[in-house]
Image (cartoon, rainbow over all chains, first blue to last red):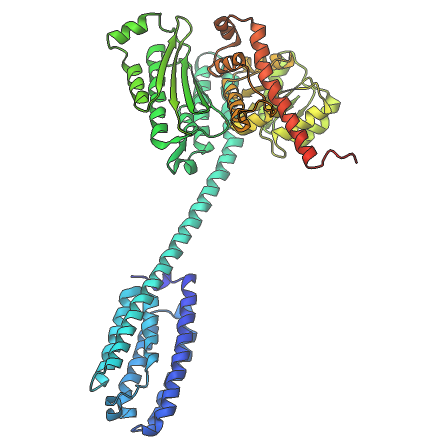
Length: 376
Length: 213
């Protein structure tokens, strides 16, 4: 159930609408009394009843507009005033007149507190208020007429519907608040990224550069600085999040994840869009190829990834500068079914209708080229 | 001449250059200032950080080339800002190096830039290759729309550069001379820069900006 404190700016128009309804229904009650006062059992008693009616209408309009007053005392008083007017009705108007269908002293006005309860606390609270007022209305009538029944049903409906709308208002306000906070956080992140880019990254690159040609510990520090620079840059460059959504992803963002001081990624400046599943398969294949480079050429082997897009085809090549594979060894290994990783890459790409070519010569490194047709 | 907004970098680069026997005629941390002092300093090579606090790298390059048409620009970039690197190359920069490159690599790049060679990283080759393909795609099948095309040999060379092969390795693999490989690489840049100038002029004429005042 909504807490009164969460009632925010979205509810202000609702409170205003309820105040308008109270004044309009008050005018209706005054008119009814003026027309029928000559038939009343105690016409003079109608005067204090009308004073209470008008006074509370004005007070309610004033108090409900102030969030500090919004709470159980106000809601309770509101309901109590309505019940008093309802219960006083047979005494002022006379039992027989009521039985004949004369409107009570709170006719339509009695819906005011029901709406107030609904806005303050949602559907359930609106329904409870409607049932209480309805029950009071029924008890003061010796007999039920179809018209009064319809009125009560409408009041119950109004309580539930308005409560529902009020709840939605509170939820949308909370969601809006979350969105605003998220945007602020994103902006802060971008600001931090700029700061890191201008300071930390530059210094790390500098450390790496100045110590790279030294020996021993300094060289190790340079290497570490270089690794951290690459990792931090990938973290703050943040090209990914917005493009990751949707059925197509930019293959560049996936391949960028594999960049390191040892792995160069070359790609066009414009996005290379592929269906998400295909792009991730290609990413896995590239990852497997890079793992293969490390396994066969050592952990400090360099590798180059090239992403190209031509009309109708996407090509990704992974090249290393390792010792290469002697001619015939590849075919021999394939015959013996010992191609392992290469075969798993081939499998992945073939499933998507692509081809894999492995080019190698002793002393010239090994190149794995993945080609995919893309429907465009 | 060294242009970089980070003082530590500026000093470090300037010291490396001085130690290697180059004369550093000016340093600057801002693009506008760099363009203003360049005519007096008359540098042969400008080592330019693409990310400056005031104006874009492209604007700096245009300003430098307008004042000193013979100047060579070697750009350094700390991040993978593909589009700005590509724009800088189209605006007339002839060399590109990532900031994490080692001192040796950097000095070699300065030497080659000064000699008039195009200095490519594999990343830059990938960008240039992508740009030609983009132009080819948007230009349609008609060959006479002025969009530059790569010859088959140029494409082949550029792909090998993007895959990390050195000019020497490329020359060996394609049985070409080292000089020919270099010329091919240079041509790919030259055509792109020429096309960029033609496009700018065409744009200016369309907008009536060429009217004499």
